[in-house]
Image 1 (cartoon, one colour):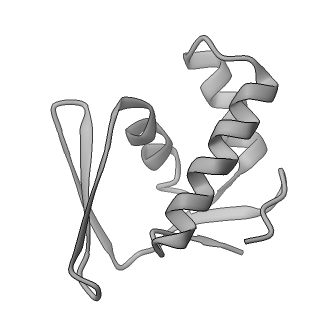
Image 2 (cartoon, rainbow, N blue to C red):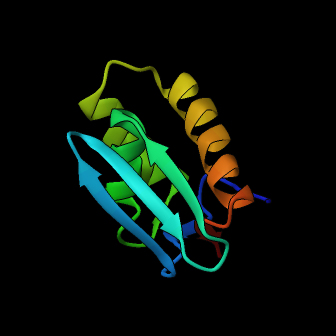
Length: 92
């Protein structure tokens, strides 16, 4: 995945998700895989409801959480890479 700070990112529309007690449970119906996200992953998933960029995600997350810009970019890039590898998101 060639993810830059300005790459457009969106959820894979075939993924079903539901929030339960500040966590998100997701299912890929095609592969019949279940995934779970904790609080920050859930917030990122919420922000991915609409097409966005890595930069926009980190702008929002650094306002909401106590995290520096560089750390946010690194962590979110890694997290998005994991979601992409599981076909949970699309990088346009």
